[in-house]
Every structure is written in C-alpha cells, then in structure tokens.
Amino acid sequence: MMFHLRRTIWAGLLALGTIVRLAATDVVTVEFPASGVPGELAFPATFHLWLPPSVKRIQAIIVHQHGCGDGAENSGETAALDLQWRALAIRHDAALLSPHYHAGDKQECRLWCDPRNGSAKIYLKALDALAQQTGHPELAQVPWCLWGHSGGAFWSSLMLEKYPERIVAIYCRSGAAATAWLKGEIPEPQFTAEAYRVPIILNPGLKERGDRQFNGAWDATSHFFDLFRSHHAPVTFAPDPLSSHDCRNSRLLALPFFDACLNLRLSRRSSSLKTIPYRSGWTGDWTTGEVRRQAPSSTNLSWLPDSLTAEAFSQYVRIGRIIDKTPPRKAPVIVSAVGSHKQAYLEWTAEADFESGIAQFVIYRDGVELARIPEKPNDRTGFSQFQGLSYHDTPAPKTPELRFIDQGPLSGKPPRYQISVINGDGMEGPKSRSVRPVIQHDFLP
Image (cartoon, rainbow, N blue to C red; front, side):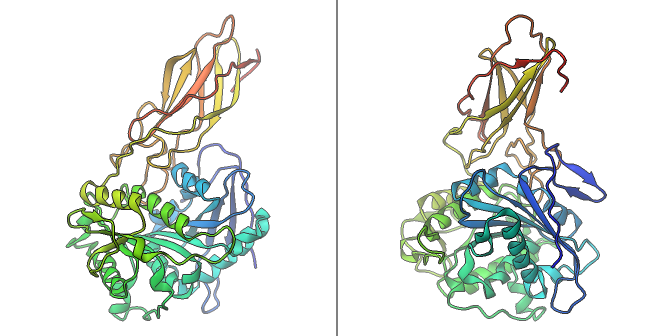
C-alpha cells in the first residue's frame, strides 16, 4: 500500500496546476496512485479527513462525495474545510471525509462512481491508512453517512449493496444508479433486507425533470424511490423547486436529516447500528409539502425520521429553503490579538451555526461595530455564506480568512475587541470575550 500524509499551514487555499490543494493544519490527507490491476481503481485518489478538536473517539464518518468531471472532482479538495458540515460532525463526534477521484472530463466516470470498479476497495484502504495516521483506529470500523452529488450519488446508492450494515443514512443529490441498471448499462445490484432499512433522501432539482441534459438524474432518483418504497423502505423523495443539477441549498435539508439519523442509529454501547424505528416516522408529500405524524402507508409518499426533518422537508419542497428561527449559540474565540502603534491584528476560530451556517463576522472596537467580514457575503445561491457555496455544495476556493487588521490609531490605551457571528438568516449570535491587543512596536502582520 502506498500513501502519503500531508499536513500544511492554514493560509487560505493554494492553486496547484488544475487542482486546488487544501491548506489547513487540521486536515489529514492520504493519496493513492492509479492501479492497472483488474478490479482495482484505474485513477489516482486523494482523501481529506477532518476530525473535531480534542475528540476522544470517533463515532461515525460523514462522507461528502463529489460528482463526475474536473470541476466536480476539484470540489472534493475543499469539502473538508466546510464550517457548516463540520458543525454536524462536532455534534456527533464524527469525522468529515472528502474523497477526490482524479478521473477528469475525458475518462469514463463509472470506472470510479460504480464502487464495484475499485473505488470501494480504495475507500476502505483510505480509512485504514487514516486510522493509522491519526491514532484513531476506530476510523476503520465506525459507520458512515454518505452524501453524494450526481456521480457521487450514483456511488452512494451502489455502496448500499455491499455495506448496508455500515451505513447510517444516504443523501443522494441529483443522482442514483437505478436507471443505469434498469437499462442494462451496469450489473443490477442485489440488495439485501438490511439495505431496505437504511434511511435515504433522494433530492433531484425540479428543473431537471424534462431537461435535455439532466432529465436522467430525475429519472434515476424517481426510479430508485419507487423501487425502495415498494419494499417499504424509509426513503424520501424531496425535489428542490429552485434548482436544476446544481446543489443550491440542499445542505439545509441534508444536515437535519443526517442529524436525526445519527441520533436514532448510533449507539454508545455498541458498534452496531440501531434499526431505524420505521413506525415512529413521519409522512411527507413532496407535491404539496404536507407532512403528518405517522409512517407512510402508501408507497408514493415519503418517510421522514422525526418532526424537525419533517418541518425542514415541508419548507424545502415548497420554497427551496429552510428558515432558521434561532440565532447562533456560540461566540467566536479570539486566539491572537497583537498590534503596534499603527494597527491591531486579530485572529479567531468559530463554530458554524448548525442550521444556517455563517454569513458574516462582526468586529467590535470598544463596543462599537467596526467592520463586517466579508463586507458582502457570497450569496450565489440566495443563501448568504461567509465561505460561499459552489455548484457542488463545497466552500468557494477563495474563502476569506479568520483574521482582521484594524488600521485605526492605537495611541494611548489599546482598545478592546470583540467578534460575533451573523448566521445565514441574518441573526447575530453572542459576542466573544473582549481582548486588548498585546502591543509590539516592531510588529508586522
């Protein structure tokens, strides 16, 4: 087995050729070369792992799997940096994993997005390597939440064939493998009874239906839903009314869904997953947004794990958003405050608001608002975010850094600084502890 461990220093994101490389002190990376052996992965693969700070034992792995093509694959380089997905991981002592398969636009995507072609084997090898390198041997054994977009959703749906007992839940954004095996393009998977007990959300864009390029994603998700609901599986069909094939704001449904499933299925006493309590679930109708507190009796209606996911589903299928009603709970932590007679330099850390992420940071000087970082949040999806959101539900490569330089005069007694968070729905959280910068007259940031 060949792999390389890479740890680099946080300095934003660095471009390296056509591949965006991670730059974070808290991300561990393992790399594998392509293999020419039949049944093994034909492309190089890279896996980026983030662990919550000071975690003692990992309980699960949240996998954020990209789709096909150069743009989608390169998004796998930033997924582990996503602050809102990290907030989900922190809630459950889970790791956040972003695989990157280096196939490119000119190669056959199914050579990796069908896990039977070697990507499942290399994924398991990566978990073994990461378990060794991080000192967390449980990484090789704990269960998974699988999120996938397009080809990544195709991959996730087929992982269900061989590993259902290790999968907490699956979220398929704009893709699944059903149409491919129904057309005879790939071998038909043989799902066990255990596979039909795994909670799944199938989340196409409503604008994919009938689209010349992306109708296949709509058909694949709808066929998969019909097949699994015919087995009375706990499956949800939740089209996004605002989008086509891009991920838009799908995380607003994915996060509460995974949160509910992790709560229902993880056991602190056993490594085995709990069976999902199907009868205690909720019913959802994507055509109306109506939900009710009982498990669905009809196979054309969706199953939802709890009341919070049901409420999120109802809003999402109607308006493509979920409205956050609570402000951020945690204040940022200022980890460095130094300055000279001309300026002050601040650095901080922050945990994202789980429901709606971080749109901005507010900098206060002696209790008065001084600045907002960034001045104008990225709102490409209509959901303002500090990190920005790409087509593939990953942070935009040019994410602002968690630092600020106050160029105001610091003559006399240094001022006190505080920082707060504005979430995606515009609500402000508590301010950080106030700090005075340590004056160093020869300081240069």
